[in-house]
Image 1 (cartoon, rainbow, N blue to C red):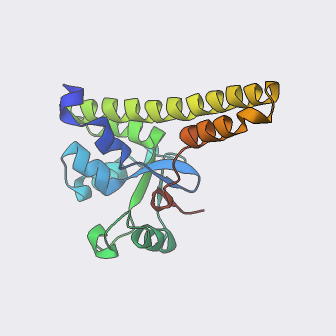
Image 2: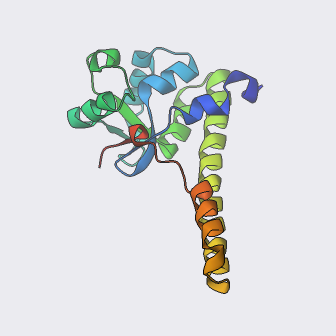
Image 3: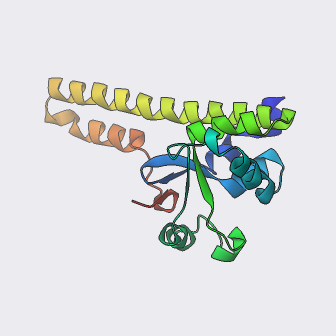
Length: 166
């Protein structure tokens, strides 16, 4: 049922890098949970002790402007006149304890699987890159073109519009 609710790709598109952390915006989470953003924020406010600063933080005006300029969000007006909350992976996990619907549980499972998949992909690329570098040292320059081509294939594609903040 989890996979039929939300495709992993939809979740991946809603994960951004801000302040060096992978986060999800409150409005995107509300959309996935099928609740209104204001209801999600109210639950968070009612349960502040569940959300320390490393689980959730408010975006600054500058970060919002950067997200707009990079087309991550269509406009500041799309945020409804407030600065959105950014939830880290731990903050998203904690949401399942304050949003108690069955859908929230299933959505959280899918989101956690997506975060895990992204971590595994990053780690796999690091391992593969190291192995290629080791092979490069063994062989002479005649294979350099091959190694260069392989490196281009395994390097993560740089998507500047996904990177926001400092």
